[in-house]
Length: 228
Image (tube, rainbow, N blue to C red; front, side):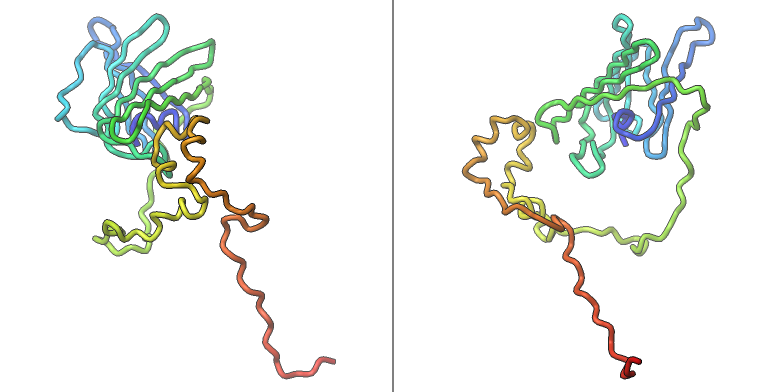
């Protein structure tokens, strides 16, 4: 996952600094890795971001500066991935502006994620952290390889135009495709006017809404013996 997983993931934050051995100045801040989040380095020495053709990795390339008591960072060169596991993806052109704001023993991280490929407007998300006196593992438990039912060398996929589930959401909820793929515009109340003539309300569901139908009742087979 890209560095924005810091505020989206279900784990804490371990942060430390690296100093110049001669001057004692902070060269970089490090935010620890986790199972599916790479180590993030925040360069504080004023170095520029590399060329857009430079390698993109899970940790991205981040520079930071202090604006008063707030640390502001800017991240580029992230790998393509997903903003949420079951939601909008992110491209390798995504950028992240993060603000680390401290209030007493509470540290709030506000991230502004911009992606010209998948987002029609920036996404803002924040998360607050509090110091933990207990020791925290810098990484998660090791991954254990297991057989998931797919032969080695085979990648499950659908060819273009053959995915049978492509209209599952639109048919189940009766929502037009343009409302699902319409971006930020669809979040605002005014969009109801645009959708009014296309949306057909389904009948109210009273039970087993969205769940598979219950299997038919099993009738016990007769044993041929008379009951006493």
